Every structure is written in structure tokens, then in C-alpha cells.
Length: 80
Length: 247
Image (cartoon, rainbow over all chains, first blue to last red; front, side):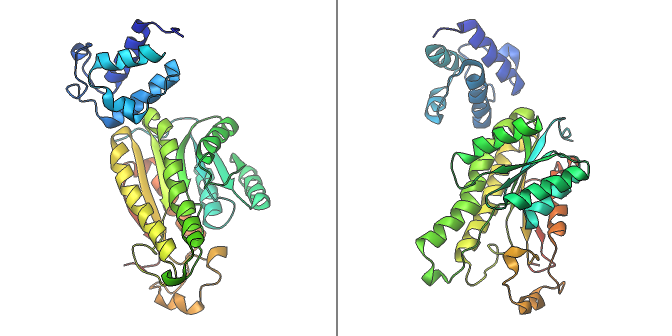
């Protein structure tokens, strides 16, 4: 569909991570979510936010594959 | 201290047309919650309850659904939000059934219907309702358990298993979402005077230290407290409303 740019996806994900308590200055594509103190409940909420914004449903298997911020952005960009 | 109930939040009470569920719906409405009253067979009673709540200045809607249907949670939550104008941030899993018999003679169907209604529906509704609650950074789930489960009651192995599991589910789900301002607690009634307990022998009351059956309103009071802002630091707990039976 390509209705959403990668910048839009990156912004939604970054804003979400900040709302979960991650420091904005630590967030970049290579940052490990675990290093940002993002845990499984945060990822469950992030999945909901992604679904609402981009209509992309992420399974728990998809989420398990995400380890960096870039992984999350690329996965959503691939399907949005 | 956690923040209070967001404006527009509403409540859903399953199995709310009569007995303990109806008393809970009334108590929550009195505390200002718009209330969705779920029922399966008690359409007339649910309608009367809604009318009574509205006559008292509250807001309520009756919603028919079989909570054992896996599609029911999403449909119920959407219908409640559409009717009452806000997300369900208080869920009371009250719907429950009995199908008594000694374990040696319980049928698979007796087992299935009790576990599906009392336990699986509690899980599925909670799972679905938590989505809005964690986003809102506020939520209350109150699961109606029983003194039967934590303690034995011959003839109710299926019911006891379901209610003990509800308490276990309550504890673990509670710790998973605690930091989002969502509390999940259980209320465990003892002998309460309702349609569901009319067949319990009078002699059973002698085993209750308070020497009487409780009322649905006494159970509802515990639920209303756990739903209130005052109970924001209570989560994963089970409150026994049993006249001392389990003490």
C-alpha cells in the first residue's frame, strides 16, 4: 500500500518508546530495545499502536523477532 | 499515587441481570460509573435493572452476549463503548455457572461449561479489555471468585477448579500490568443469598461464623471499593466476603 512513509513510522515508534520511558537521546535505528528498558508489556502496547496507526497486525512471533528500533521500523514499513 | 478514573470511562458487568451482578451494577452506577449490564437469558431482568439505574439518575445499557463465545469480548466492549460513549476501563467478570456432582461422576460437559463460563471468559474478556486500559494508564478488573476453590466443597470440583484458577489468573495478570495503573483483583463471596444458592441446605449456614448468608449488596460494596480511586494500590488481591467462612 505504501500509504505511510518510513519517517511517519519512525516517528510513531519513537514517540511510543518515549512514552514508555525510553530516553529520546538514546533512540536510534541501532538501539537495542532491551537497552532502552523496553519490555514485553511495552512491546504489546507498541503492537496496538502500530495496528491503530498503520493497520498492521503484529503477531507475538513477529514481536519476538524485533530486537532493535530499526527492526521495528523495517517490519512495519514492509507491511504498511 | 495513581491518577483517578478518566472522564468518560465506563464499566461492564458480565452476568449482570440478577443476583450479585445486578447488585454490582447498581453499586457502580451509584458511584457514577456508566454501566453496561451483560446478560445471556435475563433480558427482562436486565431491562428492569437498567430502568432502575436510570430512574436513580445513572446511566446503563443492557447487552446480550454469551460470554463463552470467543467473539463476545470484542463485540461486548465495542457495544458498551458505543452505547455509553467511552471505553470500558472497569471490567467485572461476574458471569458464572454451577454444574455440581462428585468428581467421580462429573461429565465432560459439566466440566467444560463451568470452566468455559467461569474461567475462559474471564481470561478472554480481561485480555481484550486490557488493551484500552494499558493505553489509558488506568483500569480496574474485578473477578468474582468464590470461597470454593481456595477451600474444598464436595460436589463442586469443576466449580472449585474454575474459581481457584480465577484467583491464580488474577494474581499473575495483575503483576503484568501494575505499572500501567491497572489493578486486577478478585472478590470471593461465601454463602450469598441469591437464586444460585437457594438449593443450599439451611444447615450450611451454621458453618458460617456470622451465622447468616451474605447479601449481594455486601459483595457489591467490595467490588465498588476495588473499582474506586481509593483502591489504586491494591492489586493481585482477593477480598473474601464470606462472614468469616474462610478465616
